[in-house]
Length: 220
Image (cartoon, rainbow, N blue to C red; front, side, top):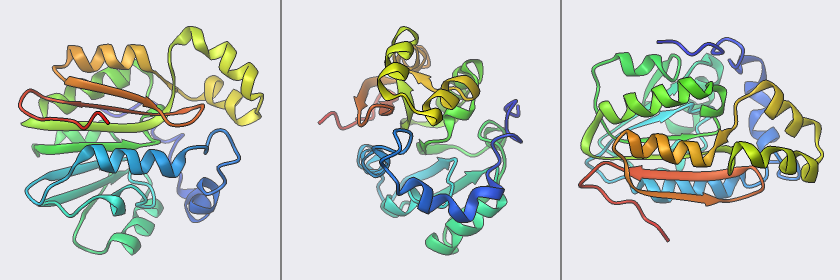
């Protein structure tokens, strides 16, 4: 299954300016970027025995924060983003140029699935499908940890837009698919994730974490 907007959100043309772009946290879309990556890396709690997949690796900024596991699979639809990630991470990771949903057509199983600032490119229906397939491809003690652009609920969107008053925020809600935290938590619970955590890290950046039975997620 390929996400419907994969080609639209292929960031090949923007790859070499991406790190400079995300460093400007004065933009409300970028506010909390570093804190969110740190939050995800911390909650993922990768151990040396874990097989990890990073969905939407980009230039590797999350992946290089992760402790070394048994295996790291870096996934992105952008070839140029993966080239930059490999320059940071080296040859020890596996680099897979494919869509976030298509990667799970492989028979691999994972202990940890992480993602930052990528899944908001999926429609609501595709997010729900992703949560289900992640749970199906995880080992029994798997952890799923995400940091992304989110709002607490659909009803919160008008107030968020009015408070931030920024063209990039308007574009997020008109052209992309920010998560709704309440619905995301419901989808995670329905897929079998427990110990759910949601934490707001900036006006638009949130972290979500959950684990299958038998695993734990840090809550502090």
